[in-house]
Amino acid sequence: MSFPKLIVDSKIFKKDLKVLDVGTGGFCGRNTLDQYINLIDYKNIYCIEYNKERYENLCKKYINKYKDIKFYLGDFFNYDFNTVFNIVICDLDSSIFLNRFDEEISKAESLISKNGYIIIMALGDLNNIKTLTCDTKIINEYTDSYKNIWKTNNITDKIIQNKINKNLKVINSFDHTNFTRYVLIQKLN
Ligand SMILES: C[S@@+](CC[C@H](N)C(=O)[O-])C[C@H]1O[C@@H](n2cnc3c(N)ncnc32)[C@H](O)[C@@H]1O
Image 1 (spheres, rainbow, N blue to C red):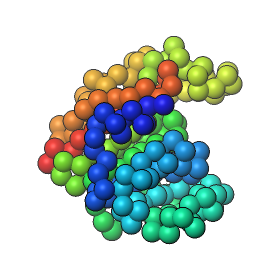
Image 2: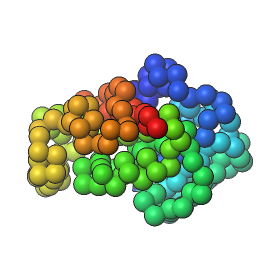
Image 3: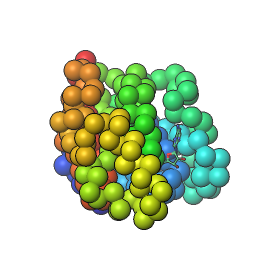
Image 4: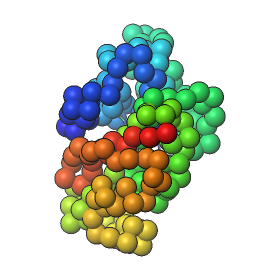
């Protein structure tokens, strides 16, 4: 799994940093939150999930042991967090990465302090799309959006770097599956 490797290699998770975990409910925190939960002060961990059932499952899982972690039910794109973070983790649905990347990155950037980090789940080589699903209809829809929006068959780190503003620097990426990866981006100013 790549998220633990990202944590170890990047060394960016430090006790006093403030972390926003976006879409935490998908696997009930197993991909992201569980991996760094003991590295960050609980009161500095903020999670947001817009699916009510997943949000409730999250609360059930963490509420007793981790009372200081904040769990919000809401839409990341419209939510007013009223604070800035050192790390924003955007482990959102792959369709959001495909169709709303510019919005996703610009909302994350607006929430990050200078020298802070964005971690974003990204898609890779279209030849490996079957890792995501076997549903031909979904594969065809994804393939169309992928090619129309990104104008490539393989979204590399370099392509992501060229799409974001110069104040954001792609540092590295960490494979999750053979089609998905976490890209680590730093805000320079
Ligand atoms: C791939 S899962 C995330 C898995 C999660 N990191 C974990 O460790 O379990 C994506 C999640 O993002 C949520 N999501 C999608 N769009 C969202 C939005 N605009 N605001 C908040 N959550 C969103 C989905 O409901 C889904 O639960």
